[in-house]
Structures are given as structure tokens and as C-alpha cells.
Length: 298
Length: 266
Ligand SMILES: Nc1ncnc2c1ncn2[C@@H]1O[C@H](COP(=O)(O)OP(=O)(O)OP(=O)(O)O)[C@@H](O)[C@H]1O
Ligand SMILES: [Mg+2]
Image (cartoon, rainbow over all chains, first blue to last red; front, side):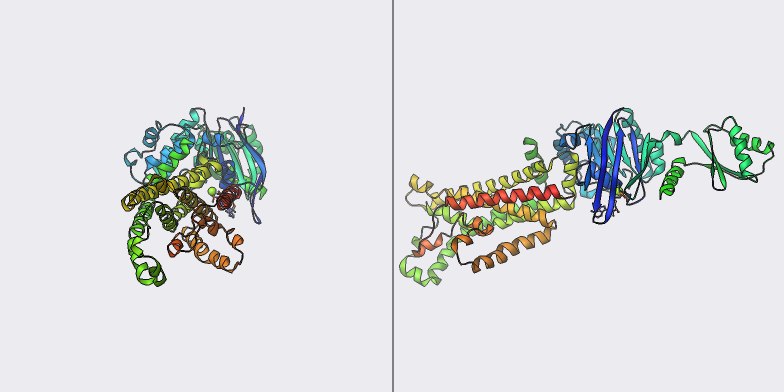
């Protein structure tokens, strides 16, 4: 598979702060790539460098094997943190400016305004928009050029639950058209629902980069513990439906197919003479994985 | 290129500060030029030595060919109004992050500079044309004996005015980009133009060195014309050497703008 963007040793220092530190990362074509990390871990800085608005201290990156030419950016729809538009201009005029910059016609403008639910307010000046509407306009602008790649930094910031769900659908739809999406977000749940790949940054360093499918949502993770954990561990390894068993502190963490009935497992354990002292179904496996990654290497 | 022009047009189309400042620029020029009669009158009252030599009413302020030199000289004082607009234009692009957004969307930094230079050239050209037509009409009305060669003599001050305004607006663009904050940038522009540089220039003894300071150089394109009505000798032409100095400054300013934008994180 080809990469849409590759970075090599990308580094940004702000004085003594290392916002991004020696980042080498490939983002494959047609992936939905989540960038995770705590506040201040360098997500926005990384995306800013990829979009040529922050000068790297050192390192290189290349879009479509083509380095940093403006033509590359014309094919990228992007939102970086807060929506930025000319406040005194209407949504329509703002999008016209973007169309001119991207070297395309005005014919998509109506459609992207409809997709983002702003069509009725297209003549209102940006200044008069609510936070969520501003965010929607930012999305509209990112969609405008029918981009090959979309870069979304916290795209659901300020949106209502319906807006968040709409964006999730939109991301799925766009990804379904064979586009690449790079998504920086705190909302692990969201990332897990839509992403195929993810990377974790911490203090500017890349901690992990890989597929999401190991932690896919059609799997069930259970935390279990009993009076004799080590024996239980050996037993569970023989249980046919279990995909994985791991010891995590006082607990065993087991992965089962999503459709599995927990009662069957507990009966099996009980019939083999164990007393279960703790049994919890864990919903967000990506979150636990994320926290694990941060803890492991910290 | 066409797209860059169109982008700037879209930006100014419904921008209140643009229309207010442009109207102010035009309005004040008209006001000043038309109230010149009053000025003329006050000359006859206050300037005793002048009134001893010439009759103020016969001073051909508004007649061809003098009108070109006079009107461009007076109008050049009002370039600060357009400079205010230039500063607002660039500092608001910075504070609203639209400069950053433009780059992210696929403008190059050079494109951005070119689009702002287009705006400057448009403003300067518009203002110069306005001065030209105003001068033409006033000249035709005021000159008793219209001669074609009188009408075109001194009309070289119109392109000089255009050049002067362009250079000053580029200077304002540089200051705005450097300082980023609207109020502070305006303050510094005026502090430098009206106080700092004049004081330095005043202390410099040698004339040709005086002419090397940027604002003095820009202003030198159109020397003060009125002395001639007191029979003093004035420079009533645009000096080639002085044009070159201004062109060099313009190139220098644009280069600084380019460096600033290239080096800076947006
Ligand atoms: N202009 C700047 N000057 C100095 N330090 C900066 C600047 N921009 C970012 N930083 C620092 O760089 C680090 C990374 O910031 P960045 O905005 O990339 O984080 P982030 O991962 O996007 O965080 P968040 O999740 O809060 O959006 C932070 O420590 C931040 O303080
Ligand atoms: Mg961020």
C-alpha cells in the first residue's frame, strides 16, 4: 500500500519545549488514521508542520511523494484547532475564497453547505455563527475541494451529540470513497468507531503506531479475577472461544468474540472449581490500550 | 494571477473598514483641495512678504500646469489613511488566523504576498486616477487659457504619486506584518513616520544622506511646490535618482516581507 504522507525525523522545538520530537511516521493511503495523545503531546504541531504553517526545527515530510508543494495542499481539506474565516464575510463568500485558493469552481459550495446543514444560513456573516456552526463551516470548507486527504484536528469540538454522530457518518462515508482521513482527537470512542489505524503521541514522541483492528469493537474484553488466579489463567488458555488471555496486575484480561454470552464463561469457570471474585465487561478497549501505551513507556 | 486578484476583491467587497477608509481618503482629498482657496486667501493675509510681491488671487495654484504638482503634493499627505487600511488588512489576517488558513488551503506564501501587493497597486492606482481626474477637471475649470502643452507639463507627478503611495503602502504592510497587533502597528508607523525619522533627518547635516531615509526618500518624489509662489527655487520635476532610491526601498521592503513570512510560524 502507498503512503499519502511520510515523515522522517520531524522535530519542532519551542525554546526548551520539544513539541514534536523525531517523529517518523507513515500514513497509508485510504486509511482513517487517528492521532491520539494527551493535551500538549504535539498533535496540532505535527499537523501544522504537515500543512506548512509551522516550520520544522529539523526533519522532513513528503505528501504523495511530492514534498511540500502548494499543489499538495490544494488537494487536502483541513481543520486545525479553531475554525478560521473572515468574520465579516458570509459563509458563501468565505467558501468562494477557499475555492479560488484551491483552484476549483464554485459548483460544490451549495452542496457542502447542505451536507453540513448551513445552507439556510449561507448569507449570514461568519461572525454571527454559533461555535458549532463555525465548526460545521470548517468541515464544509474541508470538504469543498473533494479532497484526497482530510486532516481533522478535533473536528467534533463544540458540536452537539447529533453533530458528532453526523461527523462520524461523514467520516465513514468519505473513507468509503477511498479517501484518506487523518483525525486528531481526544475522543477515543470516536477514534475507535471510525479509525483503521492510529498512532499515540506523548510529549512529542511517537509511542505507538498500528492498526485499530486488534481492538475492534466486535470484540468483548472482560476483566476477571478469582481465588486462584494463576490456575485460572492456565484453565482459560484451554477455553475454546477465548482469543487472548493476559495477566494485568490482580486481574486477568480476556478477549472474546463480541457475540459471546458471559454466562457461559462464568459457568465454565465455576464448574472447574473456581470462585469468581470480580468480573467486569470492559467497553472501551482502545482507551485501555491507549492508557497502557502511555503508562508502559512513561 | 486572476484568482489572486479575485480573492482580494472578495475580501474587500463587504469589508466595512475598507469602504470607510477609502471614502475618507477621497473625501478628505476633495475637502483639502477645494479649501485651497481659503489657504490662498490666508496667504494674502499672513504672508506679508508674499503679498508684497504677488497678488494672491493671481497665484495659479489650480491652473495648468501647476495643478499637477500642487494636487499630488497635497494628496500625498493623506496616504496615511490608506496605510491604516493596509495595516488593518494584514493584521486582521494574522489575528483571525486567515493567513494560516489560506496557506493550509493551498496558497503559497509568495502567492499571499502577491495578492497583498495587488491590493496595494489597486489602491494606489485608484487613488492616482482619482487625483488625475480631479486635477484635470479643476485645471480645465481654472485655467483661463488652455494649452495642451501646459496640460501635460508636470503631469509626471501623477505617476510619481502612484509610486509614492505604492512604496508607502508596502512599508505599512511590512510594519503590520512585523508588529501583528493593529493598534500597535499603526502607532509605530506614525511614530516613525512623523517623529522618529524626521528627528533623525533633522540632525543629519548632509542633504544627500537625508534623502536616503525611507520616508524622506518616498516624500522626495514630490518636493514641496509652494515655494515658487514666493519666488524661491523649487524642484518642479521628479528626479530620476530619487525614483531609483524609492524603487530600491520597495524591493527591500518586499524582500523583508518575504523573509518574515517564510521564517515565521503562522
Ligand atoms: N507557539 C508556541 N510557542 C511555544 N510553545 C508551543 C507553541 N505551540 C505549541 N507549543 C507547545 O508545544 C506542545 C505541543 O502542543 P500541541 O498544540 O501540538 O499539542 P496538542 O497535542 O495539539 O494538544 P491538545 O490536545 O491540547 O490540542 C505543548 O507543550 C505546547 O505548549
Ligand atoms: Mg491540539
